[in-house]
Image: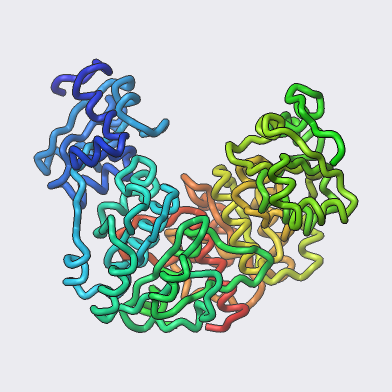
Length: 269
Length: 269
């Protein structure tokens, strides 16, 4: 094994740590992935964007086959670090001995539309990192073509979002910073139906037409979708609530809608 | 308005605060509900178990119609407190000026089975409060008869679980402390099919028989369902994953399974 990074106050360690701050991520175009699941998927699916991989002694052994070896095979820098160094680099309390620095990708809506997507989800003004990450994971699970994220939303390269995507961040394009209404217009112009998911919708999910390309439009956690956005969509769809619950949270509603789409598009109903 | 509680070091305030600790909840049989949504549902659906309601001056005004008035109408103790007192009482950083102390209920599995339940979910060794709360909320949303929680799981009256149920805790019975295998036997003896939700299942969710009474069996967040539990279930069902995601998290998988059940049982597919 080569040199072990031992100094938690070194420039390198500080610079990794500083990526926990959004302005630093924006300036450098880089972000940190923590934990074996995320790092493994970064190495597996986005090796050309992985700048450095850091593992503790123990993690180097534990994840030899699924992280260290494939990372080296891909020509990546794999560094051994002390537990103390890793703890400083990571935002999470349990990074399980593994972090990586990765270059952010900025795919455009035009890139996504060029692929004739069948299923998309647009998050508008989503603020909670766990919700954003979970929706990205659900979109990945159902084979959605991409996740679209509006302006004034949480940064999808923030440590909490990255963690909660469980590696899905590297599986499908995430287009960010989109203005909501012009994006809806552009989707419609490409033959993609826009379906607002909203508790006040008149179409029940089982009755929604999910047979052609469509994009789920999800509102903010607290205030939902503003009237002018709902009016801009082709349909407003309500996930049925049979019991006494007032509503579903954003991530649950998105997961149910996306699975309904997957059922209609792939499994047949 | 009567007396305002102003002393954050009083015995009363300390005793509310102490309910953040599991041993204190176990000893007293009481727990704290924080935030308007939870407190409103406690007052609305479980007034006979609400011991005290505490509101700040501002919250007293803001939630006059949906909390303070109905609480008084139900003969409950409604106390006005200072912001400082409320902050000490609450575990959460944003209780929005409202907390209540509620007596825990301990329904038995026999109680639930006596109602001939059509849909249940059993959480085995669930540890994450957010997951437990979200599953309770999803079970409520689809009109499940109850949520069953195994021994060695998170305490469903802990502040974080209570918060994440968004009031659903008061909408359906939650049976806790159940031994897994004998519970599965008892469910089966009552004609309730037990469906393990597991990424290694051979039956795909759209092919699962959800037409008769059944109980979803969900595993721990990290290690899933042990082999002997899976073997004890009538079927092992996999939520389809079309994309590259490795898995869904517990709350997402449970939500999708429960909605599939609701679709089969209520909406038709």
